[in-house]
Length: 270
Image 1 (cartoon, rainbow, N blue to C red):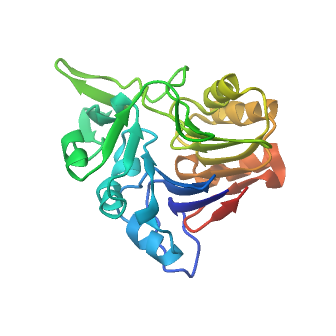
Image 2: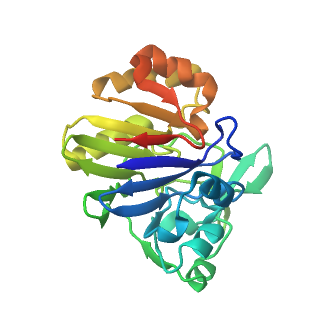
């Protein structure tokens, strides 16, 4: 099993790679090739070319949620991976906004379902977990409290708080344990881990990769969540994107060298 980070806020040096505020990972597991998220559309194609990643061989694209920094590269991805399946939660197309001090900004997916289907994708929307290849699953909706007060959806009567039910993750079920790939973890990092173990049993996490969303939280809540990781057997944790590099020391304090910062170009073999 091999996972390559294609888009992230951080980039390795000297490889002509491009960093951006976003996330995407290319997964090769059990003979299948899956693209998890697409970044915001700045670096996906360039980074894939530099790294020799065959996007044309992608069988399924999984969207962790409907924000632009995870879906903006979708048109480029579909131009390469023609006829692929697009797997997401139904709320991925909800009109998502960031609202603060009376100012609102659209932060949702830049493309309509009709456009995506016109580009040849088979759109599969499901609220519950879905097996997308043997031993490779989405988590479906994750129960738990969302804390993003400035993230809204626009309805007929104006803005309401986004419940972010579309936040899902990807799980690879290996005989040795579980590999968990996160988008932004809007559903809450600990809630996601608890949900995954509810689905697959209390087994070790061989690897957790992706955004943990601790960056926007208050310091004490941030520390509380990271301390909570001690309840789980986690053998490696590559934090990315909305984690914030400045928070890596908190993970290292809890987990030692098992925690490290992911970046564009990183290839993880499990």
